[in-house]
Length: 230
Image (cartoon, rainbow, N blue to C red; front, side, top):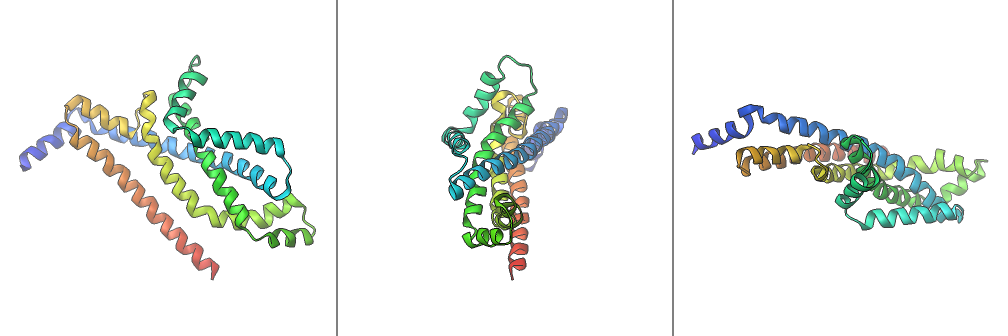
């Protein structure tokens, strides 16, 4: 049994340096996740600000309508379909890096969820905070930037971290546009060795370890935030 295990280990990971499919794939997965996450935060922040401003003041009606369409479409369709549309339809006739396309697709998708996270965080702040800011002579923008947003960001930070973890796992569909991410790397090994168990289990374990690390960091962050509130 041990001999069979070591032979399978050698065949799947050592022979022909097949372990590099996993390491290169992991690098691609983390790259897409990082930049898509940053794009999602920026886009989500802007959309969340527009939506919360409309809810509080009734202004920005046209921008709010555009944001509602964006949220409805993105949250109502599968991310893999969005990825395929952006790659084969939007950039179908252009020569563009596939990793960049995936980053844009996942960033746009993540932005829709981040927007609602920011909006809920802003709307959770007591209305008296806005009134207090205005009474100090701040205009609406200054009150939002200096008083409301710091409190809202502190509230939504753990949720944003959880969204980042979800984004990490969602990037596993990048292989649909022939990107050699972590999942695709495991699938390539499977196609070379005709052994599905070990490479796919390895991929699952790598994802699991990464998620566990991020989950632990989120728990530490939440404890720090609770300590600061005392």
